[in-house]
Image (cartoon, rainbow, N blue to C red; front, side):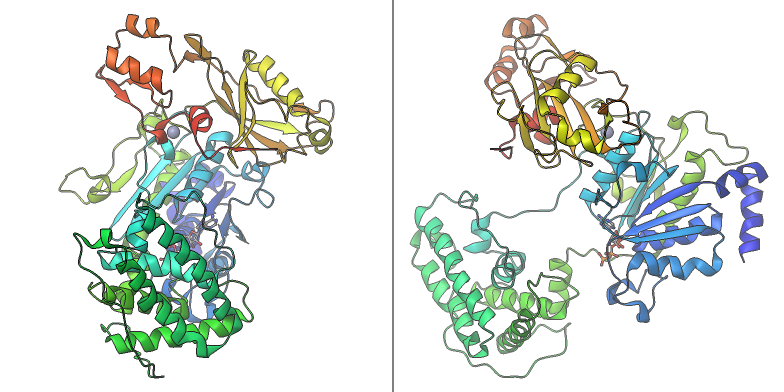
Length: 609
Ligand SMILES: Nc1ncnc2c1ncn2[C@@H]1O[C@H](COP(=O)(O)OP(=O)(O)OP(=O)(O)O)[C@@H](O)[C@H]1O
Ligand SMILES: [Zn+2]
């Protein structure tokens, strides 16, 4: 089989390109649905070395589509198991890591530099964004991919040449106002979110924090008071759970579904236009548990299930510090499903089967093995074009490369299942790739001897920043220095926890000029070898002058902005007036702002003392 694949690869690539492929080292992030398929393709194609990173272990629910895994592999690490499973068809060097790709100690920037190409086969925005940033920093190509049901996409990303992952805004998970979840649910999903995101962590997690400034989505003082009181009372219930005393379970149920509902009913404002909930009232519990997760259970069955799941979780608390909701953890699923259904009953909402609740609570869109296989196939084929290894199809410019997406994934009506447009140019307003970025190499010794002031001074001189700049640690959103804040300038980088993996954002602070120096970003990398003669090395890169976002009013009028937009720009500099291709003005969303502006104006900034 290996010999056959080798012959096929040589046929497609030519002997010379095949030899190059045999010396190519690539990184595969994620060994789930797409990752398993992709790994199989990469070894069959003959890549010289493939490093596979996945932080997770195998669940029963993965086996229907992650064909490198078997029943006996459940609870084993995905990356190592996937590598073992393809060993017999592989001539490649395969290295597996059970680790989070965002772990900067395990995977410093220098580790990423060894690869010619990165493949993302991930399931979350955060990790995708992280690898995208690393690719931009190191100028390495990345092939991004994803699927949801029958839909899927691949996007080759060539830094500096084509759109990056963050050039377009991405949909974020749906959120609900706190008051709907806590006081006035009107759909079954509101009860599921209550059980999963509020009740479960309050009872079984030790680290829940209810912020005093949490936006509850209501101005009604009585309702705010009740929500806060309820949170405090739930801490008492957490004590019952910790005590392991099963005789307390009826008290817990009574509090949640009778007493709390009675308190809600006392806030008459809430029920002027809504149907009033009906407190649970008297109930009995039995040990009978319905095993059919596809059935819609009776109220009695829900109560028995809740009590039974609580008992099991109480026992587990004795040995597990904290239990997090996981759709594949049956105890936590039963608890959340029954708790949500009893709340739905009280609020006259439809009851759902445990199976349905698992889909909703686990944010599951059924994964389809064939879609994963198609997308992984396209991703592996695209890699040959990105690396320019296809015999007879030389890629003269990255703009000749294609992405691929299903019609539904793009929202473009077409009668074809797949579309393959060529890659777009980078978005000049992208918060990631429009910002000049580079790596500051610094010796371990210099981290403790260099003051923040020294580093800022060196950056200012090299990239021609004026006197006033702001510096933000983007990894934690900490403001380290700006025009009104110089308390930390004398501290060492070490004291400020500025070490390998930290991303610093620099912004020109002047607001009285038409042109300012563009914002820039610097990744800190400890590197004692290259910094033997200097404490640190700043990257060679150009930071251009750009139009100031806060223009003096006169200038704006001269540039043809109408009065209304100019006023908006003056009153709040979070808004930027910009021209799109048609010449019309538009307001940028916060998520589109360049990171320097975003950080300056965000309320999440933490001042260090
Ligand atoms: N930060 C990360 N570092 C390493 N691996 C990651 C990271 N984030 C996600 N992953 C891995 O990416 C893979 C994505 O695969 P997939 O979308 O098939 O999800 P899954 O967890 O296997 O399936 P499901 O979510 O349906 O149970 C998972 O195996 C997950 O563990
Ligand atoms: Zn971009």
